[in-house]
Amino acid sequence: GGYIPFGPFLAGAGLTAMVAGPNAILKVLGL
Image: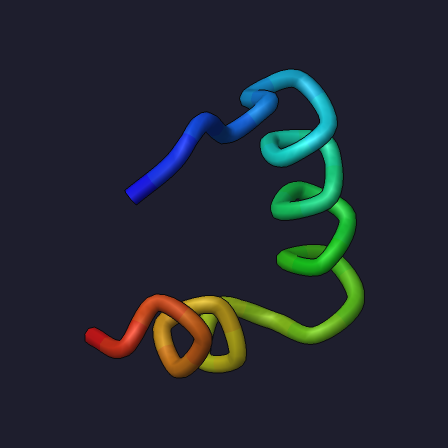
């Protein structure tokens, strides 16, 4: 655990979602 800067984190996640797609996001999250 640790502190996550949610502003940059969410921005990066949103960009990644558009570029890589939902499947990649789930894979990264381990779901």
